[in-house]
Length: 122
Image: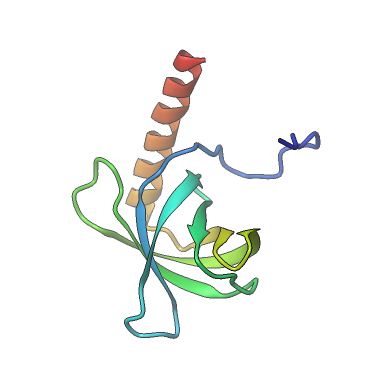
């Protein structure tokens, strides 16, 4: 695995978690695909997708977030999408846009708790 040796550019801590996300290109009405997160921060997430997205594409997403019973609707913009398995699997980085303040706070608490758990398990 290639370890990044430069300075951290992310504004928020990131945690490896898997939960279900429904997503669609914002301009399409009902064409949702289903995916799973690979990692998550208060600023965005990494999804495994079945197609490559163009940088700057806006997505509407529905998150089924652990410990929050209701579905969370968020908007994000594609930062990068790269092929992992030819024509089948892509890793797609998404930056959140205009997160609800309450969800932003709950997300931060969830990440903090998961980071503590990761440190305990090392």
